Image 1 (cartoon, helix red, strand yellow):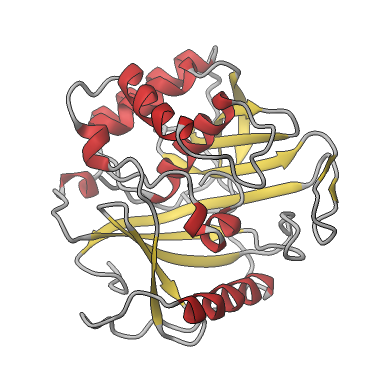
Image 2: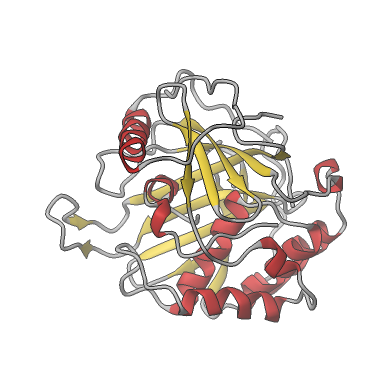
Length: 321
């Protein structure tokens, strides 16, 4: 596991290429280490979180907006939703109602979003398969301007990685904040960004869905923006509902799902209050990649599994709530 992050200092430099390579190697090594304790059910970039962090410099979008926290709890009684439109509306109404104290904090320029997640670590990097039987906690910090991500380098030193440019929370929050406008703004960024190595063959709809998943996973969203995105998901052609989905912390919920040419992606929300819980991704068809080290990914291979445990806006990277 990663060492505890030391007290952040204002002079922390932007990560150099050499330090970045060391951080990536340390992160991948940590992802292979077993979790110190078994996962207990508790009451969520897009699949392949590990790949999003390691390849942060090639991220298609940097999405920013408000905040939420996830509490503990046992498996709730599942109430089936009739269709994905109903799921989107329920989740949107819950987000717009602003039920969480975290939403009452107004982020300001220069602040960062702290994100704590439980993920299934990579099984054998550089292959994208994750280990269903192991978990690790991951802490990252994301600047609210969408330009930087910070993480521990594995030696207790915080490194800051430049990302973007891309769409920001301010962009998404500009009037009008509607599902249609949200999709248009995200789609414009997707259209102007070449597909990554694991996105080859992905439809525009799939890339937009994964961008929304990334936004839900690691960015702060105001209630209005979050509600608009929940209402936007059913508008993406091909998005369906999965009645019983499970995040990496063992929490059961319901999911927005998109099945592409070779993989299925899920955005999991609580079936009680429709808060975002986590993500899941799985190969649905065999896929052979040009790299011999990656080779063929077989149908049924898990590609990503996460559970969002806590998010808070903080004043600087390295600071915890």
